Image (cartoon, rainbow, N blue to C red):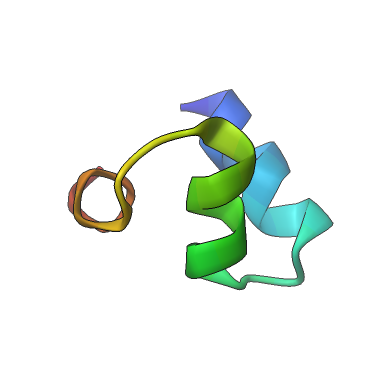
Length: 32
């Protein structure tokens, strides 16, 4: 969970970019 929050912080809350950083589908990121 902390990795997701860190990625969102790095992208100023941009979920699409955070998903790319984490190599995770956007739907998975939004669901978590």
